[in-house]
Length: 606
Image (cartoon, helix red, strand yellow):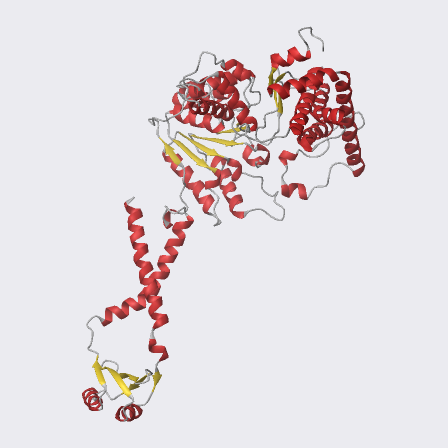
């Protein structure tokens, strides 16, 4: 804080001096004064044309101002200052004589040095700003890694991480080696030099690294991949060297690099060349991790959600010996994660965390943490002392689709259209063989949706068959089919349904090889793994005829499933009408109410 105040005061002083110098240089009258001869001055003074005169004995000059306010200057003999003054006074001229200044030398020196000082200050300020405002010029190439101490009260341990037991075991082995290396060395075992954590965003990669820091009991350096790359070539490589130099001094220790893809992207894949600074930084990182000079006692842990773009040299054994994939948690893992994130929260007796875990398939640890926090916020908004089950259910829907829009004004015609649309989704989903159970359907607007149908799978699913995909497509198209069946025309409400169904069918054909016409083959690159430079220079791996065949089969399958949904709704038109009327009356129907309306307790449509 003191340095910041000093820098601010110095900045203000230099700014004032710079502005005053520029003002003096631009407003000085010396450059605009007319030069006249000494004889001309005397003649004009005798004729009464001179009003004032300023004599400077140091420069032997006279600056005169006429009665018309015009200024001119002349030079007189060095020995005639007194005589000139007497003569001008006799001619009724107001005379002023400048006295020599004892500090003229220092003022002159300051005026000459001030521009150079201002330039030096500008360079200093520029280099300070390029380092984030708080660094020093000589520390430009120093590492920005933060050293975490083992006695930090806010530290995270493995007890705070749930749902990733296998991943915790892999990392716990590293911690155990650092604490008790003897039992490993006696068997000739060597601890991995590097561990790469990869997985979807929010699965807990950084949290696992923080837990390792809390458990290790050794120095732990944490840094981000983006902190190495700067606008000046060579700075990133210098910071990598400085980071490993610090680590060697504190060995054994752990280095954690978050989002390593910022610096570890594949070299030579850029279209028209790579980024010299990033590639030099990556080269230095490769050398430090496993180069000519070994780094004993230094373990590097890195995290990324884009392992597909990392350079192969970075992934080889000896650098990152282990690649740990952090998956989305299963139902048991979600239940354990919810227990962690509800610690210290007053839960009502009706809260069942296992039920919440079953109703949140595909949620990551970050999603579940956000869910628990949203439920607590809803309970506080309602002035409750405990968090109820309904708060968790509302929080799940807020996270998925946004808040309810009960104040939105909807006409009866649109409300009826939305009711039949959502009833079409629900009924088709309940009639197809492989449809997921519908947990809830509502016509209350939420987020961008006018209404929505919420199916929940009975269990976590890791393999999906062709029949299951086709049933999902039919359910997605059930809303549009119901609109056409009841109203004789369709609306724009099915836009998202068409996008989802088309994407599912195209993925089924091009990635999963589930095509009758094209056979068990894959076509094209995955859209979520496009590497621009590499793909621009690569020819497509299928012909235009195959592309036409893909488009044709996608259209045929989507059309067939749309006709299938229409046939199902035509055969159960009475149930469709009852569902829509119930929705218009109650606005929301849950699973038990849907079963009563559709099955009537008999197990067959009624």
